[in-house]
Length: 258
Image 1 (spheres, rainbow, N blue to C red):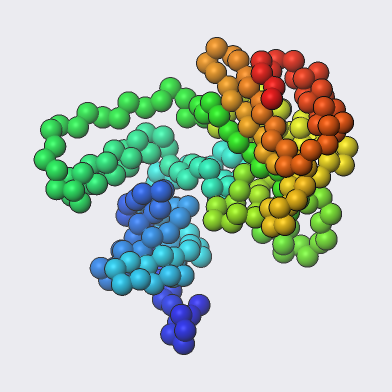
Image 2: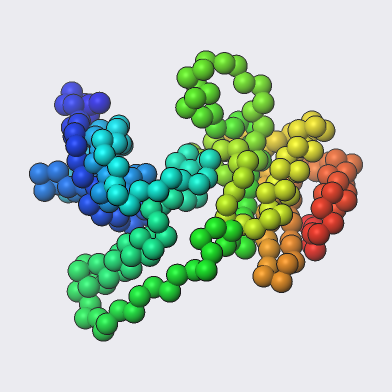
Protein backbone atom coordinates (compact mmCIF):
# COMPACT_ATOMS: atom_id res chain seq x y z
CA UNK A 1 0.00 0.00 0.00
CA UNK A 2 1.14 3.53 -0.64
CA UNK A 3 0.35 7.09 0.28
CA UNK A 4 0.98 9.10 -2.82
CA UNK A 5 4.27 7.71 -4.16
CA UNK A 6 5.58 6.58 -0.78
CA UNK A 7 4.69 3.03 0.35
CA UNK A 8 3.04 2.72 3.74
CA UNK A 9 4.96 0.62 6.26
CA UNK A 10 4.51 -3.11 6.76
CA UNK A 11 5.49 -4.47 10.18
CA UNK A 12 6.22 -8.09 10.99
CA UNK A 13 5.93 -9.88 14.34
CA UNK A 14 4.64 -6.93 16.34
CA UNK A 15 3.30 -7.53 19.85
CA UNK A 16 -0.05 -6.06 20.83
CA UNK A 17 0.55 -4.40 24.20
CA UNK A 18 -2.69 -2.70 25.21
CA UNK A 19 -6.29 -1.86 24.38
CA UNK A 20 -7.49 1.72 23.91
CA UNK A 21 -10.79 3.48 23.45
CA UNK A 22 -13.48 2.04 21.17
CA UNK A 23 -11.91 -1.40 21.50
CA UNK A 24 -8.85 -0.56 19.41
CA UNK A 25 -5.75 -2.65 20.04
CA UNK A 26 -2.42 -0.88 20.53
CA UNK A 27 1.13 -1.71 19.44
CA UNK A 28 4.31 0.34 19.40
CA UNK A 29 6.87 0.26 16.60
CA UNK A 30 10.02 2.37 16.98
CA UNK A 31 8.21 4.50 19.53
CA UNK A 32 5.21 5.13 17.25
CA UNK A 33 1.75 4.12 18.48
CA UNK A 34 -0.06 1.87 16.02
CA UNK A 35 -3.81 1.23 16.36
CA UNK A 36 -5.48 -1.86 14.93
CA UNK A 37 -8.56 -4.04 15.57
CA UNK A 38 -9.74 -7.56 16.44
CA UNK A 39 -6.60 -8.59 18.30
CA UNK A 40 -5.76 -8.56 22.00
CA UNK A 41 -2.70 -7.94 24.19
CA UNK A 42 -0.18 -10.74 23.81
CA UNK A 43 -0.99 -11.46 20.14
CA UNK A 44 2.04 -11.31 17.81
CA UNK A 45 0.91 -10.00 14.43
CA UNK A 46 1.95 -8.70 11.03
CA UNK A 47 0.52 -5.24 10.34
CA UNK A 48 -0.09 -3.28 7.16
CA UNK A 49 -0.36 0.44 7.88
CA UNK A 50 -3.37 2.01 6.16
CA UNK A 51 -3.24 5.52 7.66
CA UNK A 52 -0.18 7.46 8.75
CA UNK A 53 -0.47 10.47 11.01
CA UNK A 54 2.15 12.65 12.70
CA UNK A 55 1.78 11.01 16.12
CA UNK A 56 0.21 7.64 15.37
CA UNK A 57 -0.64 5.13 12.65
CA UNK A 58 -3.60 2.89 11.90
CA UNK A 59 -3.08 -0.59 10.53
CA UNK A 60 -4.94 -3.76 9.62
CA UNK A 61 -3.87 -7.20 10.77
CA UNK A 62 -2.53 -9.26 7.88
CA UNK A 63 -1.54 -12.32 9.90
CA UNK A 64 -1.53 -13.48 13.49
CA UNK A 65 1.87 -15.08 14.04
CA UNK A 66 1.29 -16.16 17.65
CA UNK A 67 -1.91 -16.17 19.67
CA UNK A 68 -2.03 -14.44 23.03
CA UNK A 69 -2.26 -16.86 25.98
CA UNK A 70 -5.46 -14.98 26.91
CA UNK A 71 -7.16 -15.50 23.54
CA UNK A 72 -10.44 -17.42 23.51
CA UNK A 73 -12.70 -18.30 20.53
CA UNK A 74 -15.38 -15.79 19.53
CA UNK A 75 -18.85 -17.22 20.16
CA UNK A 76 -20.77 -15.13 17.60
CA UNK A 77 -20.77 -16.07 13.92
CA UNK A 78 -20.96 -12.37 12.98
CA UNK A 79 -18.00 -11.20 15.06
CA UNK A 80 -15.41 -9.02 13.27
CA UNK A 81 -17.86 -8.05 10.52
CA UNK A 82 -20.59 -6.74 12.80
CA UNK A 83 -19.43 -3.67 14.71
CA UNK A 84 -21.57 -4.35 17.77
CA UNK A 85 -19.01 -6.29 19.81
CA UNK A 86 -15.27 -5.60 20.00
CA UNK A 87 -13.63 -7.93 22.52
CA UNK A 88 -15.01 -11.44 22.10
CA UNK A 89 -11.48 -12.85 21.88
CA UNK A 90 -10.82 -11.57 25.41
CA UNK A 91 -12.16 -13.30 28.58
CA UNK A 92 -14.67 -11.18 30.46
CA UNK A 93 -12.46 -10.68 33.51
CA UNK A 94 -9.72 -9.34 31.23
CA UNK A 95 -12.23 -7.01 29.58
CA UNK A 96 -13.01 -5.54 32.99
CA UNK A 97 -9.30 -5.09 33.69
CA UNK A 98 -8.67 -3.13 30.48
CA UNK A 99 -11.83 -1.04 30.87
CA UNK A 100 -10.74 -0.01 34.36
CA UNK A 101 -7.24 0.71 33.07
CA UNK A 102 -8.72 3.02 30.41
CA UNK A 103 -10.62 5.02 33.03
CA UNK A 104 -7.49 5.31 35.19
CA UNK A 105 -5.30 6.36 32.25
CA UNK A 106 -7.79 8.97 31.04
CA UNK A 107 -8.13 10.58 34.44
CA UNK A 108 -4.67 10.22 35.97
CA UNK A 109 -2.15 9.93 33.15
CA UNK A 110 -3.86 12.18 30.59
CA UNK A 111 -6.09 14.37 32.77
CA UNK A 112 -3.54 14.68 35.63
CA UNK A 113 -6.34 14.22 38.18
CA UNK A 114 -5.40 13.19 41.70
CA UNK A 115 -7.41 10.08 42.44
CA UNK A 116 -8.34 8.18 45.59
CA UNK A 117 -8.07 4.40 45.57
CA UNK A 118 -10.13 3.01 42.70
CA UNK A 119 -12.43 0.15 43.58
CA UNK A 120 -12.55 -2.77 41.12
CA UNK A 121 -15.26 -2.73 38.48
CA UNK A 122 -18.28 -4.75 39.49
CA UNK A 123 -18.87 -7.11 36.59
CA UNK A 124 -22.24 -8.00 35.15
CA UNK A 125 -23.84 -11.31 36.04
CA UNK A 126 -24.46 -11.80 32.29
CA UNK A 127 -21.90 -11.41 29.53
CA UNK A 128 -24.49 -12.29 26.85
CA UNK A 129 -28.16 -11.37 26.39
CA UNK A 130 -27.88 -8.29 28.60
CA UNK A 131 -29.30 -5.54 26.35
CA UNK A 132 -32.90 -4.37 26.68
CA UNK A 133 -33.13 -2.60 23.32
CA UNK A 134 -31.95 -3.37 19.79
CA UNK A 135 -32.74 -1.62 16.51
CA UNK A 136 -32.36 -3.40 13.19
CA UNK A 137 -32.35 -1.95 9.67
CA UNK A 138 -34.13 -3.31 6.59
CA UNK A 139 -32.01 -2.99 3.46
CA UNK A 140 -32.19 -4.25 -0.10
CA UNK A 141 -28.37 -4.39 -0.32
CA UNK A 142 -26.95 -6.78 2.20
CA UNK A 143 -23.25 -6.89 2.99
CA UNK A 144 -21.53 -9.82 1.30
CA UNK A 145 -19.01 -11.79 3.33
CA UNK A 146 -15.43 -12.21 2.12
CA UNK A 147 -16.17 -15.83 1.18
CA UNK A 148 -19.21 -14.75 -0.86
CA UNK A 149 -17.22 -12.10 -2.71
CA UNK A 150 -14.41 -14.54 -3.47
CA UNK A 151 -16.87 -17.11 -4.82
CA UNK A 152 -17.78 -14.70 -7.67
CA UNK A 153 -21.32 -16.11 -7.53
CA UNK A 154 -24.34 -13.98 -8.37
CA UNK A 155 -26.55 -13.37 -5.34
CA UNK A 156 -30.22 -12.55 -5.79
CA UNK A 157 -31.14 -12.74 -2.08
CA UNK A 158 -29.96 -9.24 -1.21
CA UNK A 159 -32.75 -8.29 1.23
CA UNK A 160 -31.48 -8.09 4.78
CA UNK A 161 -32.57 -7.24 8.31
CA UNK A 162 -29.65 -6.58 10.59
CA UNK A 163 -26.98 -4.10 11.71
CA UNK A 164 -25.05 -1.54 9.73
CA UNK A 165 -21.51 -2.59 8.88
CA UNK A 166 -19.18 -0.34 10.83
CA UNK A 167 -18.43 2.88 8.94
CA UNK A 168 -20.79 2.13 6.01
CA UNK A 169 -24.17 3.84 6.04
CA UNK A 170 -25.56 1.90 3.08
CA UNK A 171 -24.35 -1.62 3.94
CA UNK A 172 -26.24 -3.84 6.36
CA UNK A 173 -25.08 -7.20 7.68
CA UNK A 174 -27.68 -9.94 7.89
CA UNK A 175 -27.96 -11.17 11.49
CA UNK A 176 -28.91 -14.80 12.05
CA UNK A 177 -28.41 -14.79 15.81
CA UNK A 178 -27.50 -11.86 18.03
CA UNK A 179 -26.19 -12.55 21.53
CA UNK A 180 -27.04 -9.11 22.92
CA UNK A 181 -30.77 -9.32 23.69
CA UNK A 182 -32.65 -12.22 25.31
CA UNK A 183 -35.15 -14.35 23.43
CA UNK A 184 -37.53 -13.96 21.73
CA UNK A 185 -35.58 -11.10 20.10
CA UNK A 186 -33.98 -13.36 17.48
CA UNK A 187 -37.28 -15.12 16.75
CA UNK A 188 -39.07 -11.78 16.26
CA UNK A 189 -36.43 -10.43 13.86
CA UNK A 190 -36.18 -13.61 11.80
CA UNK A 191 -39.96 -14.09 11.62
CA UNK A 192 -40.49 -10.52 10.40
CA UNK A 193 -37.74 -10.87 7.80
CA UNK A 194 -39.03 -14.25 6.53
CA UNK A 195 -42.58 -12.89 6.21
CA UNK A 196 -41.40 -9.78 4.38
CA UNK A 197 -39.41 -11.81 1.87
CA UNK A 198 -42.20 -14.36 1.35
CA UNK A 199 -44.72 -11.58 0.72
CA UNK A 200 -42.45 -9.51 -1.52
CA UNK A 201 -42.41 -6.44 0.72
CA UNK A 202 -39.91 -3.81 -0.42
CA UNK A 203 -36.89 -3.48 1.88
CA UNK A 204 -35.46 0.02 2.25
CA UNK A 205 -32.96 1.35 -0.31
CA UNK A 206 -30.56 3.45 1.77
CA UNK A 207 -28.94 5.10 -1.25
CA UNK A 208 -32.08 6.06 -3.13
CA UNK A 209 -34.30 6.51 -0.07
CA UNK A 210 -37.12 4.30 -1.27
CA UNK A 211 -38.95 1.19 -0.12
CA UNK A 212 -41.57 0.06 2.37
CA UNK A 213 -39.83 -1.43 5.43
CA UNK A 214 -37.39 0.82 7.28
CA UNK A 215 -36.51 -0.31 10.84
CA UNK A 216 -37.43 -2.84 13.50
CA UNK A 217 -37.02 -1.94 17.17
CA UNK A 218 -37.32 -4.50 19.97
CA UNK A 219 -37.37 -3.47 23.63
CA UNK A 220 -37.58 -5.95 26.50
CA UNK A 221 -37.89 -5.61 30.27
CA UNK A 222 -36.71 -7.66 33.23
CA UNK A 223 -40.37 -8.43 33.95
CA UNK A 224 -40.78 -10.15 30.59
CA UNK A 225 -42.70 -7.44 28.74
CA UNK A 226 -41.89 -6.84 25.08
CA UNK A 227 -42.35 -3.80 22.85
CA UNK A 228 -41.94 -4.14 19.08
CA UNK A 229 -41.96 -1.11 16.77
CA UNK A 230 -41.91 -1.48 12.99
CA UNK A 231 -41.05 1.70 11.11
CA UNK A 232 -42.34 2.05 7.54
CA UNK A 233 -40.85 4.42 5.00
CA UNK A 234 -43.97 4.55 2.82
CA UNK A 235 -47.61 3.81 3.45
CA UNK A 236 -49.57 0.81 2.23
CA UNK A 237 -52.42 0.11 4.63
CA UNK A 238 -53.15 -3.44 3.48
CA UNK A 239 -49.53 -4.57 3.58
CA UNK A 240 -48.88 -2.80 6.87
CA UNK A 241 -51.89 -4.30 8.63
CA UNK A 242 -51.18 -7.75 7.22
CA UNK A 243 -47.61 -7.65 8.58
CA UNK A 244 -48.67 -6.39 12.01
CA UNK A 245 -51.43 -9.04 12.20
CA UNK A 246 -48.89 -11.72 11.31
CA UNK A 247 -46.53 -10.57 14.06
CA UNK A 248 -49.33 -10.39 16.65
CA UNK A 249 -50.55 -13.90 15.81
CA UNK A 250 -47.11 -15.47 15.37
CA UNK A 251 -45.66 -13.98 18.56
CA UNK A 252 -48.46 -13.51 21.12
CA UNK A 253 -45.90 -12.92 23.89
CA UNK A 254 -45.39 -9.37 22.53
CA UNK A 255 -46.92 -6.87 24.97
CA UNK A 256 -46.95 -3.77 22.74
CA UNK A 257 -46.88 -3.73 18.93
CA UNK A 258 -46.62 -0.38 17.21
